[in-house]
Image 1 (cartoon, rainbow, N blue to C red):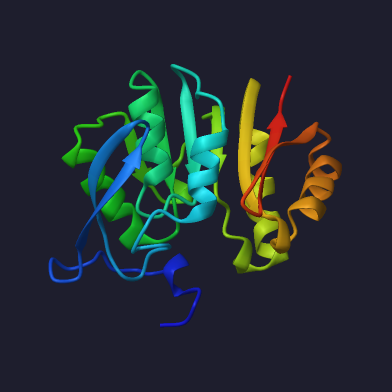
Image 2 (cartoon, rainbow, N blue to C red; image 1 turned 30 degrees about the horizontal axis):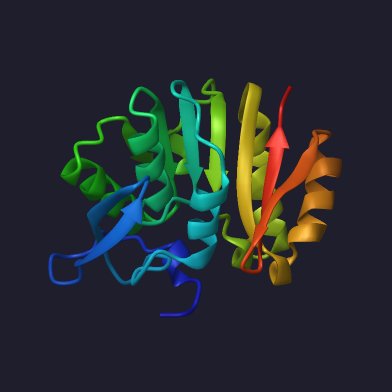
Length: 201
């Protein structure tokens, strides 16, 4: 398996492949399932931890998006913090989506909908987007991904993206502002990571 295969794994993990992990999310200790072939299968990665620690509480209701959900730490946190919201967990990796569904069911988080990008209805607008975006897919693919989803912020909505400083967070901030025509601020900086916030007024 190459370093980027976790973005595109087609098959759900077998029972033998799945493993259990205990993580702290939204002030709770949760047992979750992960598996090889998804991003950061062995632990909660540092970038996502920074995002979850630094971003203010999500809207209590509306449609919330976890873009590039992996096994689901962001989606699970959103659903725990905003149980009345509908949380869209979006990924191209079928194995990741299966794990998110399993983890949501395990903790009775009925507000999570784990789907591929094309399964999100075109008319859905997001009150918030939280993402640890897949920087390593390359600049062109990353830009295409962000230009597909960030314009779908609802009026008054905010997107929070966590990006490593050494992976181009500052240049991405400038590019986003130019490409979207929206204000993009660095709202947090911790442990080598930036949180970039896009706001639609």
